[in-house]
Length: 112
Length: 115
Image (spheres, each protein chain N blue to C red):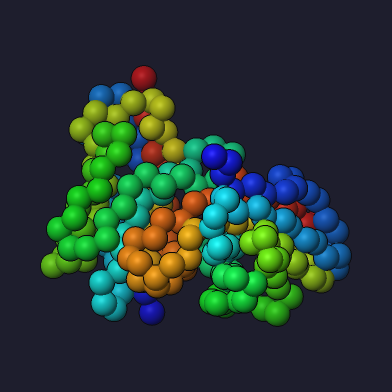
């Protein structure tokens, strides 16, 4: 079945550092890929998405590129802020399905 | 426009009881899905409803059930509660069409504690 694997957390960085959170997936066909973010005590917010190979999703300074050849969708940001501290989830879904398959989440803490 | 609304936000139940959680989707959205989030198992898909019909189901026992009303609002029910049912239950909604990348929006969740 489908699966998503994220890098182990927690990840702790200093403000203005570069961020990469790795995400790889196993799925048949061509799924859509997503990054969701969860702030403490809240639900999930969509951060960015990509629906086909080589698409780049971007939002709030975060970027991720859909790499079919390496089945990856790594999340990157050039300069993180304290407000980026949250749990980040990589997820996939198939066309026509409303079911998301999530990775285990990566907790990110940014220190001032 | 209003987001996905879940009620109640927090509740405590006793083992053996049942619980009903409610979800109002974003206006115009016809698909509602439910997820369970626990520290051990992460985020797991429970089921999805579209136009009052269950369209997809995850691997949960029959104690977990749901329904959707004609106005797209949804409820999920857990009967004979177990300690392991303690979790954050998230509702999500979308237009539910078959296009790729159909964005799914989440509510803030209902925190259930079983004691």
